[in-house]
Length: 338
Image (cartoon, rainbow, N blue to C red; front, side, top):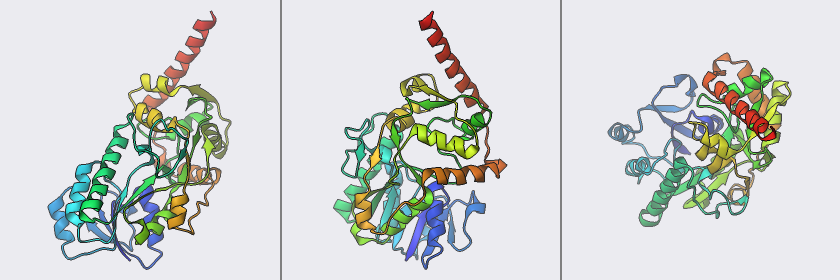
């Protein structure tokens, strides 16, 4: 198989790249080269900015692929560019959409590919829906051989997956845990969520590559493990070797008092209970199974981050904000009681 990845070093794509390079796949990565230390030696590197359409067209002029996958497309105009570049040059074009495109709030907590796409809370998700609409139109009208993949919350060793964190990532939440400070959990911590390790996601993704039954289809790839946010945060605290000191705050309150996009990431996503039905993926990729249990996966993540200080990116503004929110809640309780 001859494949081209646009991107290839992100949370989702890096594990796919690593697994493919252990096979006989001839892998090309179209990458700007900003993170050369993450580029695998055995891949063919096409160094370019995908937004420079003329440069990319010249680079691939004499190339054709079995699979092209774009991991960094977020708006329809980017896929219109991809269509111009790769129509007639690939047997399959894979677009990475998002499970956040599903109806929010969901009419049914059980999610499959037949769940309506509608998210009034998050522009990111609405753009992904528009991308899917464009690709399906190209499939129906121009026979462009597309496959749409919908990941949910996928993680790797570079960041601890959390529900509420600041713009600098989740390390500050872990640091609060280590310092025995209270940690904010949205809602009451009982809504259901799914965490998928990127190595498990990669298994499903690779099974869809070159799969003729996946052409024209949308497929979600997640773990089958359902966890409450309480279980998720307790697993992180256990991995850090500390006791969790949780403070529960409604998602609407968090959205109202923050400049972060909690309306999208919480109200339009993580505040909802979801359980993913991966029957379609398992029909297309019969040997798919997610094998990384979250408590085991997050322990590996924590160990990796603790041994790599460069990944411990502090966020003092988020830390101050957490203290303000918790103080405001305490004052509200005292005000009602007095």
